[in-house]
Amino acid sequence: MPAPSHFSPAFFKFLKGLTENNTREWFLANKKAYEADVKLPMLRFITDLKPKLTKISKRIDVDPKPAGGSMLRMNRDTRFSKDKSPYKTNVGAMFGLTGADELMLGYHLSLMPDNKGGQIKAYVGIWEPDGPTLEKIRARMMVKPGEWTKAVGGAFAKRHVFEGESLKRPPKVGDCPVEEDHPLIADLKRKSHAAVATFDEKSACTPGFIDDYVETARLGVPLMTFLCKATDVAF
Image 1 (cartoon, rainbow, N blue to C red):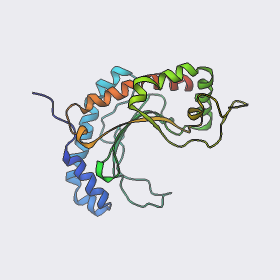
Image 2: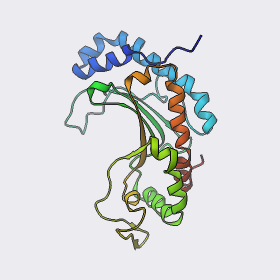
Image 3: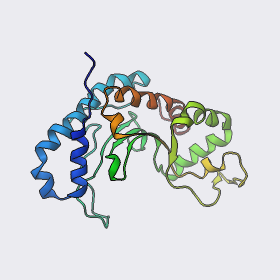
Image 4: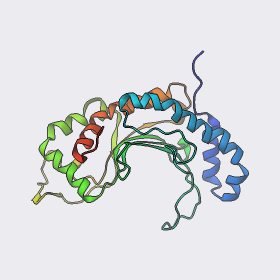
């Protein structure tokens, strides 16, 4: 008998309802559905994912604890936001690297219903690193352009696209300004080096989704290797 799928239509039904009723009152009234249809399936997914991702690297932190583990909290930090909605309308998990907690470096999975402006997104890379870290990544690109091109080309490029903001003008690397016609100028301008592969809601509800997700993670190994070498993080 094939293994059951981790996620079901009920998982996305809850998120659709939360999108339309983002209040503490609605969430508390539907907390049993959240626990049964959302939280437990996500934790089971993370539990089953752990041995698969650790085959890629034992340093990828995959923690199925219900609190303080890989699954991200549903509560939003609204202190500095104009949007005071109390809950996220996606379910997320972060699989960072052991010893690199201060960097948003690793893998991230976000699940959101298709018809609410979202998708299932599987990220790999580093998100909005600080200035010195970004400088290290750009410096390695300049010194190892072939290594970078190989890491983000081929099968990876067919499945992933980069997201995030970019500089309007070419950066300096060290004391040297980069020319606008540099072959890697688009990548050198990036403020993040995080790429995403997308899935739809239907595919996320199939038993094979976990292996499809792992395959996107495997495609991102050359990028992770490059970024780890640049930032002196073990992978």
